[in-house]
Length: 287
Image 1 (cartoon, helix red, strand yellow):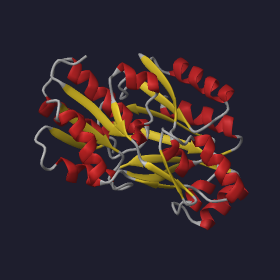
Image 2: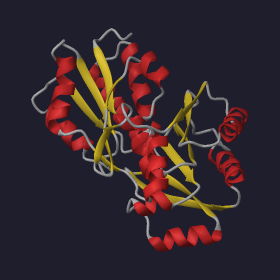
Image 3: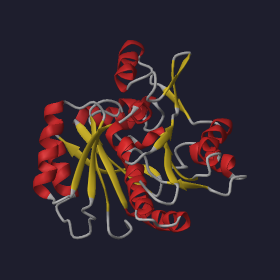
């Protein structure tokens, strides 16, 4: 427990496990997930498997929505009314209005800091845990915010997608790209850089074999990797595949902590099932 009365919070896109949320005393504000004409709450009354079932029946991808300013205002007040200082993390500002809404809600609150992770999923989770470690060491809020923002460009977040269908139906890739990927059996590696997603490499072959090649390449050289912790985050992959990849990571790099998490409803609604990524922090900003 930190001694500065600091609470670490985020929107629901950071995909931390319930165990990590409890361990670091983290609070989250959920995004909305719309299936058809019904609005659900991420992590509360809808699961990624619900999304996949809906898609299989309707061929329609879910729509997601950020918490509005009023919801953020209420969320922050729960802590500020108790005299606590809030350091809040959001999904990349270029991907959602969550950051902007949180900033608007924090304008009249001196003890609320909002950090744009310029990332998604456990890419933001890595920053949160780093901030929580700093708070536990007794560091002041202003210094935590400064040091955490310096870490933002050092987050190495990437993932391999088995199918581009969700990204296509969500308007994040063209029909031509999806068709070409399907015909050539291409498994694209998506990397988050400067707050946006882009294809950094295209693999071909069976998904499990592609994942092994991807993992080996990402951590083949650990000289610039901070080995404190790594996330293996997936969206409903076969448990045997996840176990195999986890062992590969452990055998290739001496990370102090290896966390396996499943992407929540917001992230899963954009990438679809059979998506897996490895996320960690580098010692220097990614060029």
